[in-house]
Image (cartoon, rainbow, N blue to C red; front, side):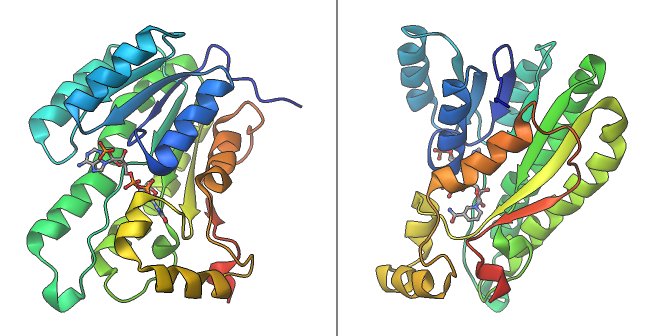
Length: 249
Ligand SMILES: NC(=O)c1ccc[n+]([C@@H]2O[C@H](COP(=O)([O-])OP(=O)(O)OC[C@H]3O[C@@H](n4cnc5c(N)ncnc54)[C@H](OP(=O)(O)O)[C@@H]3O)[C@@H](O)[C@H]2O)c1
């Protein structure tokens, strides 16, 4: 049993750092061609220049899911592909606030990046996958799409929502051999976490997590890679919670 991603083309949103970068790097090392999005056009240009000197199997796109023009341009680019085998809706933002202080602009932004952009990509890419009779899609949610905590009401609304999108799409697409699943990470050591938790909070959390440590990006990527792979042929519409056991205590 071996993963085989040769000849597979996989799009990962938010693949310039954190979990998305790990997934993109792992798929690339397994032979996939990876289409990767980031928000910073300068960084994307530099990354594309570096990729062109190598195997040309990493292609970066600049897209900001908060800017409708940028999103429309990106969707046009995506629709030019006549094959996309995998999609990872990973880009996400989390602005913390108790509900009484939450701003409508934060609601709009989190909804746009965390939920509307996955919808738009599913809508644009599923016809390509249906046409080819093959597709594997992973939507990245969170433990806060299963439970929640203070200051996470808006984030949780988007992350509970994305699994609803997974379940609905899995029903629409299974007959075409297009499988759709959610991966819900626990606390992962990325920029997003370091911004939202103090060092003391991270140490306390590590004690509570049954596995006694926070996740590395690799812990999440391994599961995403399996769901995208040729070894997954019967798992769809599920939410895989990768949290070291945290939501059970
Ligand atoms: N870290 C955790 O502990 C954790 C736990 C549970 C779930 N998650 C989820 O896992 C996913 C990845 O999280 P992460 O921790 O790896 O995040 P991260 O390190 O902050 O990276 C976020 C990625 O999303 C992109 N992004 C941010 N705003 C965007 C926008 N407006 N338009 C398009 N792309 C945008 C970023 O692009 P740039 O690099 O260009 O800014 C970056 O590539 C998110 O959906 C998050 O909610 C994370």
